[in-house]
Image 1 (tube, rainbow, N blue to C red):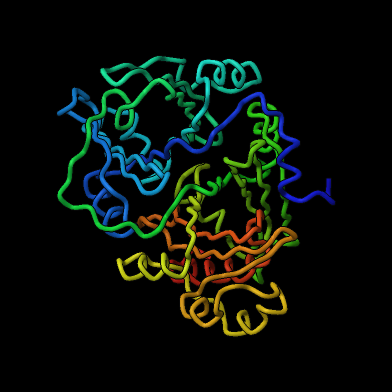
Image 2: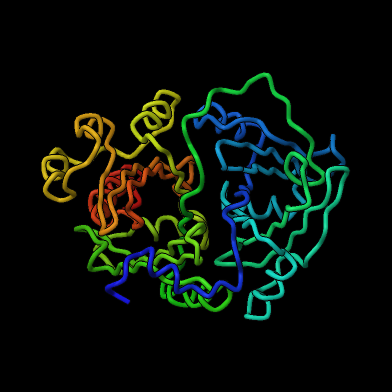
Amino acid sequence: MGTLTVSQKMTLAQDFLPINGTDYIELYVGNAKQAAHYYKTAFGFQSCAYAGPETGVRDRASYVLKQGKIRLVLTTPLNSDNSISQHILKHGDGVKILALWVDDAYKAFEETTNRGGKVYMEPQTLTDEHGEVKISGIYTYGETVHLFVERKNYNGVFLPGYKVWNSKYNPTDTGLLYVDHCVGNVGWNRMNPTIKWYEDVMGFVNILSFDDKQINTEYSALMSKVMSNGNGYVKFPINEPAEGKKKSQIEEYLDFYEGEGVQHIAIATNDIVSTVKQLMARGVEFLDAPPNAYYEELPNRVGKIDEDIAPLQELGILVDCDEEGYLLQLFTKPVEDRPTLFFEIIQRKGAQSFGAGNFKALFESIEREQAKRGNL
């Protein structure tokens, strides 16, 4: 398998669970109204749908934001005696649901639970005047959930129970297109069991692996494996900490999230320079740029690229390549006070990999932030 490209490895997945892509990502947050304003202002998301007391939902309020093919759902509890409140108390703001768009939510549930998936939500059909949506769900790592969403017989704004959210405030988008991948952090010695779970329960295939010899700095190390479904529309890299002189970024995440969970959401763009400039102008904070030597060595390491190096260096954008092309990427700082969830902006120019050549520069930048927080 070592000689196959990433794209060729994807074809080895068992496709008993056809997935059309990410349907939505739901975050449990302390104040969804204010969080929605942040994601609109800073990232250029647009108001889409709302559910809450005004729509007959008594225990929570949920705001749906849209940009390109991305749907973010921000949900906040309306009282303390609530499983959402307990989730936020323990983890802070974070991703609860990675919803997957499937052809048959009932069959997806049957297939995955028969293979050992732990039930989160029994299959159910939601209906309103716009049709029906079928949903079901299982737990993955930690308290994170995969919801299976079948919406072929629905033409409403989002899901039954939601109404159109009309807002006079909709900043222009920033060129974000779709979810490229979502990365999960798991505990010590938990990566391989999680990988096996994705293989056995979801039929995914391991397309890339990195060990602590490849992903290390002077102070810390981690291990990572990338899982993909057959068409490559859904990819979940899984990280676990490895022994190092000091605390790794994965350990810091596990300490502050108080468990396993989604570390970052990678979002694709067709023009990373334009997107990053807009995000920076709107207040999104990114990790510091690597040293000048990184950009001096870039042509030798990556080869010819279409972009001018000067703006990449000015913005701190990282570049890496594989046998299928190259990619450009940049990572935000955590988007909440706990050093947990962050975002990646990625532009692929053929490459199907995940920037292994950038790991050292990236993690040294993360470690500088960790040191400021006193957590290295």
